[in-house]
Image (tube, rainbow over all chains, first blue to last red; front, side, top):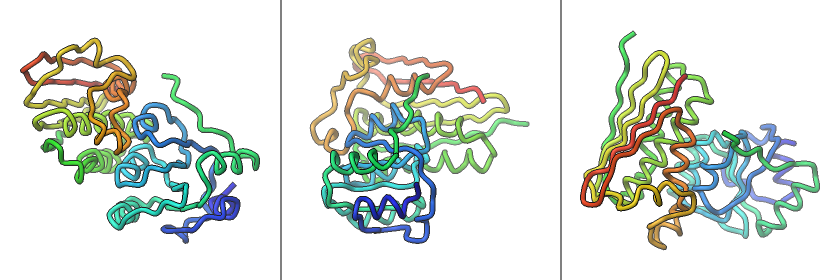
Length: 118
Length: 139
């Protein structure tokens, strides 16, 4: 699936990276705790989260995550968007809650991210 | 090849710049042609170290030494030290404030996560003294 399909399925708005929507994605990770993203994610995945601040972007950058979907209709502030632009991270925003967003993507064939087993 | 050394000062409670040092380290390693899996392990370790210094310490430094076969990370602060290292190394144990938790951190995963990324890991600290964490990751 590519990001364009994710956008359509989640009825999401593209806040950044319209030109990168053809990027292929294979898995999804969803949580509001950045410590857990750093601890558990192994895949190059996309992140669904309700945590809207620059630390979300920094965390994504560290993990080579190149797209973040903000849920519950949240939109990031300018500082967060600026950082996302600098780090080439696509930003989507959906009105769905985290649970619903995950359900939609899962039922359309996207699996959860593989976790670190080290 | 001589080794390459990078060093960054980290200010206490400087949340607005949190991650900048790790981002710069990541870019430098990419330029040096280090493989992406190794870069990611280094990035997670330095980012956790950077957040720990910002959240818990009076300020400190992160040094990275890149050798042909390994990358060494030295994170040092100026105190106030960890009272119980055994507890601090436990997943889920945290002394972080609710303010820090609202930023998505303070889940008690920092030190365990650094250790998980490391091939060799050591920590020295005690109450009232600096904390020093050394990590070696083989390429």
